[in-house]
Amino acid sequence: DHTMIESIAEALKRLQIVGKQDLERDWHKRVTQRLLESEEREKFEANKKSFLNAFRGKDKGRFSKLIEESSQYFIKKNYRRGLKALERAFATDPQNCEVGIFLGKLYYEFENFADAGKYLRRVLKNNPHHFEANLLTGLLARRRGDFAAARRFLGNAADICQTSLAAHLFLGSVLVSLGHDAEALGHFSRALNLKPSPQMYLMVGSIYSRQGQLRHAIKHMKKAIELDPAC
Image (cartoon, rainbow, N blue to C red; front, top):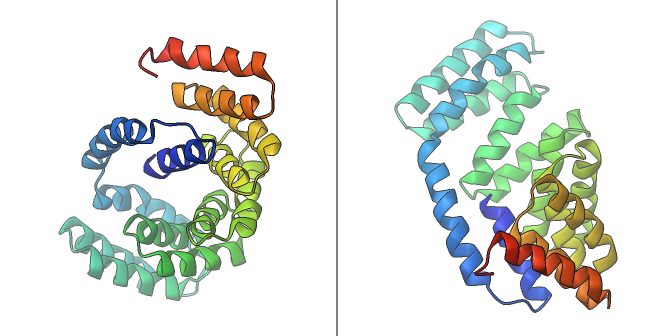
């Protein structure tokens, strides 16, 4: 959610639309509440079964022991040791995409983008059509300014899961950065159909305005005002 609002704000800025601070303030409040409700150890416990079910290695006993060891560290909020134990478990079963994507997501959340990329690449090597791995790899490419790679991976994610709000929104923001407004409009419109919001109506209306399609621009901007009179 936090990355999505950054993407919307960045795209609106490129479209020369004001209000970035208001967008960030409103969403930050909601995202902060979400983070307070979600602990890493709870995520781990919810995924333990999937780690074990996805095992394809030779020594499941050692793998299970490392998963349990990691779980105990997470319960005690010792995330550093928990991650190290989980990494050792992944080393015993490198084809386990469930463990690999969990490590990639956690490192991404902790803003350790180098290690996040390392584990995401391993997941994609074993499963090139993994939705989350494509999505996060695209976001990493976007962060470092490699918009061509970001477009490729986010495009994969959008194709794999056509109902993903995040994939269409992130891909649209990358396309705006590349100057491909018409193509971006298609993905923003899909995101709007999936989850209408005043910010998305404003985004789509702004692109229509840049293209000279003023009737469509006015229609979408009126929708933004209907949902949020302060917009």
